[in-house]
Length: 87
Image 1 (tube, rainbow, N blue to C red):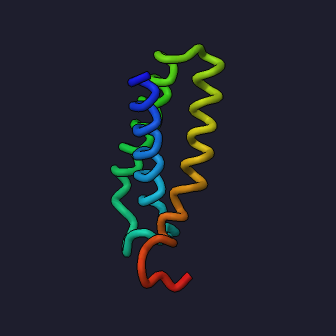
Image 2: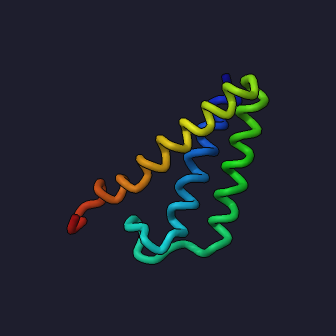
C-alpha cells in the first residue's frame, strides 16, 4: 500500500515538474529550467517502477497510465485557483 501512495505522489510531482517547464504554463511567471523537466521524467519512471513492484505488470501499466491521464489534465487547472487570474 505504501508503494502505491509513493508511486502516486511521484507521478503527481513529476507531472507538475514537467508542466512547469513548458513555456505555455500559466502557474509561474516564467517556466522552470529544463533540468526540472528531466527530474520530472525521472520521477515518472520511478513511479512506474513503484507501481510495478506493488502490482502485476498489466495492472501497473494501466494504473500508471490512468494516473498520468488524471494528473496531466488536472495540473493545468491549478492556475485557475490563483487569485487575480485574468482567465
